[in-house]
Length: 112
Length: 110
Image (cartoon, rainbow over all chains, first blue to last red; front, top):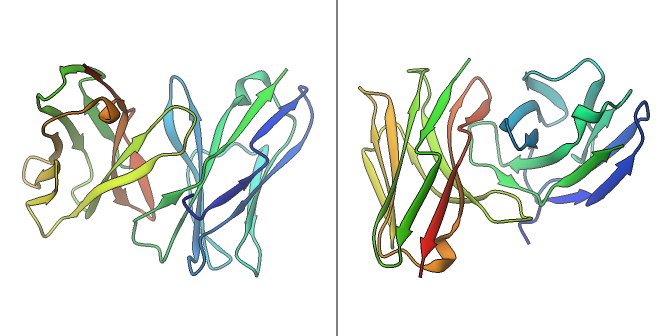
């Protein structure tokens, strides 16, 4: 157990729907990072939050949004889902914002 | 932004032999280079890392070397064992995020 908790582990939903993925960082970690992993693209950076504030944004689609709450957990919202959004979504946490992540076990999203 | 490339994409080695995976990065400002191991159905796990003020770091059977001038770094696994079979990712830190390579599938043949 890495200490980073992601829920749910699996999610199957239909095109056009909206889902929320949740991440609880390791105790004491202030940074949360979201990544998308698909077979062809490897680990693609989506967004980074540090202590509630957005620090960096990758190639995150406008249909996707995220936030980090005062208790430091984070949620990734995916809307108007398309078949191509099917992937593994990983959350990682870190003590600060200088690298050194610990990953969760991921949420496997399948859009049908 | 940072671009990280890994070679080779697949590597097969006999048990007991050494494995070497090489990565190159593009941003000379990057200062932290971790390696992650990902087993099937699991999240990536940090196995070793190196900062830009160090040229080499070792931890038992694994080591990482960094050449800042050439902008490349390598993972070395000695005395490979079947449990070393996994996908290995290199990454470089810059602009408040880690940029990852596409991963190397390492297969250790018993």
